[in-house]
Every structure is written in C-alpha cells, then in structure tokens.
Image (cartoon, rainbow, N blue to C red; front, side, top):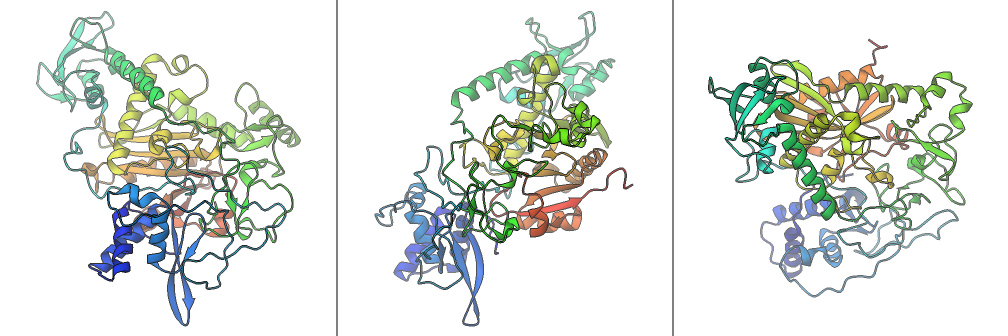
Length: 577
C-alpha cells in the first residue's frame, strides 16, 4: 500500500483533470502530487499492481471503486459533488451519480474507470447501502477522519505567547489584562498584591512575574489552592476560581446551543464502512449486523463467510467471545469498555472479581478494576519531573460518573476544565481542524472533553488528557485511553512550536509509560503519520504493528486516522523489572 500525506487541496484535483483533458500541462509533477494528497485526505487508498512487467498505480475510492489512472480518479472525485462546491471554479456541469451498492473487487484488470462486478453475495454477507450524505457530513463513507499536522504556526497567530490559565481567562473575557489581584490568607487579608498579565501575575513589591503556584509560594502560603485564594481587587469578592467557573459555564451553555447532531447507536444501522477496520483496504467485506464495522474474511482469520447474522469482535462478549449481546444480557466494563455477558464473570469463580462488581462500577476482570483505581488516584495530581516541569493526568469532570461538583470539588472542577481548554488550544495550534465524519463535531474537542456516545467509534468517554507544564505554561499535550492491562492508545500528541526540539515530548511520554507499567499495561499503540514513523520507531522505541498483531486487538475500537500507520511499543511491567 502506498501512502500520500493527507492535504486538503481540491483545486489540484480540478486542475489536473482539466489540464489532462485539454493537453495543456504545467508543473505536472507538483499538481499530480497535490491531487494525490487531496484524494488521500478524502479517504482514497493507493497501491501498485503489476502490468506487463511494469508496476502501475491503482486508485481506490472510499466506497471501493478502483481506477487505473489519476485522471479517472480525479473525475470520480469531481463527480462525487465535492470539487465544485469546495472551490469557485466551474469546469463543467456534472450530474451527480446515483449512489450504488458497494461492489466486491478482484485483481483482474478492467477497462479504465469501470467497476468490477461483484459475485452474488452469500447469505450472511451484507453489501453496504449508500445513502445521501447527512447534513454536516461531507463524505459519510470515509471510515476515519484525517489527522493533518500544521507545517508551521499560522500567520498572525499567538504561538509565542504563553498558554496558561491566565491567558485563557483573558482571551475569554474572564479577567482583564493588568487587573489588580491579591493573595489572601485564611482571614481574608491580603498577603501579596499584583497585576494579571498573560505570562503570570506581576508582583507589586518586586515587579517579578510569577505563575499562579509560584505567586502563592511568593506570598508565603503552602495551601496549594492558588486560584481559590487569588482574589480580584475590584470589590467583587471573586476569586480566579470563580472566574474560571463563570467562563466554563458560559462555554458549556454556548456549546449546547450550537452542538451538531447527536449520533445514536442505530443511526448507521444500514451504512457499514467501505474500508476494512483492520487493514484499511476496500473490497469484499463482511459487515457487522450491530455497528458500522466491516472486515475482510482473511483479516478476521476466517476461512469463509459465516452464514446468518454476524457480529464483529467488539460487539461480542469480551470474556467468552460468543455471540450477539442484547441490551438486557450484557454489561460494559468501566475501564476497557468491552461488553460482556452478565453471567460470564461468575463463571470465573473469582472472589476478587466479585468484589469488583459492587456499586455502580462494573469490570470484566480484576485487572481492569485495578487499572481503573490507579487512574482515579493519579488523575489531577501534578507530578514534578524536574527542570520546573510538571506532568498531570486530567479527565473531563463533565463526563465522569456521579455528581461532578461533589466528586471533584467546585474549585478543582473549574480548574480542570480550564486546563483542558488550554490543552485544546495547543492541539489546535499543532493540528488542522478535524471534523468527525459521523457527528460533524470537532473530533479533537470531543476527545479532550471525553464525550460519550452509544455509537462505539465516536464514544470517547474513556479518554484522559496528559499535559506537561513549564512554570504553569502548557507546552505538550497527549490523549490516552487505557483498555485494561492489555493495551493503551495514544492517538494525539502535540508540542507547541515555540517549545519544540527541547525534549518535551520525550519527558511526557516517558512519564506516561512509567505509570502505565505500574498498572501492568502490556503495550502502547498510536497511529503515526508516515512522515513521523521514523521518529517514533528510532527515537521512542515503537515498531510498526503487523497484521497478525493487529488481528489480536480487533475487539478494541482504537481512534485511527486515514493514512496513518499503527505503531506499538511493548511495555515492561513492574513484575518484569
């Protein structure tokens, strides 16, 4: 399989098709490459096929159609309706083609641009039924969203300015620059006064600038509650914690008012993927009867297509691996998110496991209960890692179980939301905007704030966010989801442009791996862009995951991206050390 870096450039597709049709070609190599990058961003795949002793490039659309030239592939993309709306260039009036059922593919050469007719489907095999795109959905048949890295900071952006709670409050009108503040003691009397800046609080006595934690220490206090005790000196009686909570409540209210569609579990009952969930190729696929997932027979390790209804590994019991789980016959593990029959844990006859089934938390194994407990203890606890750096694991309180304010505390909940919002800003600085192909929402925002869904592939409730701060300035962010002791995934990692080549990503990942090993997690996986595979493999000890290894993890729904390469790193547990 050939990978082209995903880049949104519909102009190149139109220009290549138009100039190839007219015979007037300029900068053909550059335009060809840009056209292929755009097709990659739209979910196309590429591979070489032998033909009379030569290798020829093949182009496969997201719905499984194979084309033998870039010109016919570009024509198909234009016919799909995207090209003319994405740019204001009119090449010709093209009638959109009517949706067709997905066809199976063979390796025999066919005339250019024509489809290979499928074999008659066997009983139990579903062919995808394409429907008109939903609102807010440009291409519903692309299985995964694209992850596009920014090559550099946007012109006029504030990439060199600090990313901290104070800068976030200023940007969201929570506080005013140069506003007067003071740190209060238990009696409410001022211990130290200063003014708010983006870099921190400038002390009135020495004119030095401190982060919130450092200003608290400068005031001679060790309460470790800076935001709650730093007060606005304007007579309002508001603390910085109050300001954080006001901004948070305003953002949540605005988000609910503008929130796009919510995807229910059965919204795509008849719209299965056009790509295999294991290898990302199209072709003749077995479609799950419960979720949109689809697989090749070989990728599942099966010899033939099963008869009757078929359910993918993630829709089967995570303990016994058997059958369809009706709504009243299964539970979902609180940690690894695998479904399991109500009676399967009892069959293990484990007293430890029975203890894990008490209360509202349900676990499929004792190890999942231990991982869950360890993560809960670690969340929200800053860990000094040297050189004024602090590593913290965060979890969106709004998506946790129970009463958010009661469980986390009013102040901690507000500060947690503030830091996650700053983490989202760092992600947006480093990645192009990515909308989920199912929900139309900002994918990164849904992951950072651990938003859940009944549809498994857009259920991000299990995600945590790891941040690395330098003197309260956030420099590196990563998202992580832990599937019990078997595997953890880290789909998004970002370091601010102004802090790159300083080893910040190394510090964050090393501390994450150390804590995962304490929990007994066996491996860490991530979807790497082709341009970064060497960095992850040579500098961080990862390796590209094989098809056989991937097939053993099909029961886990990883956050994967179009055009990425799945890599893994085996972790040594404490028992191995």
